[in-house]
Length: 91
Image (tube, rainbow, N blue to C red):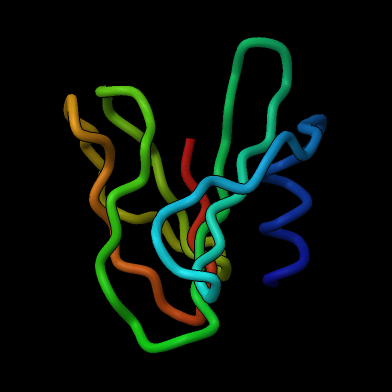
């Protein structure tokens, strides 16, 4: 299920860059298709909150298992999310 979710959500997108959100154990990867960006986020350390430097708008998120997350709201500071060892995808 995790592989299907990953390949479906990022179908047609290409890796663009890793965003710096604080720690070496934190991974927020940006993928692009045209003008659209999607992100994958997780940590290899303990779960904690981070601020992702993205545009102020609503984001749709899903868990790596395909379950929908509540809509995510970014503001002028970025998008506050909790990183865990289970990836989340949003865009």
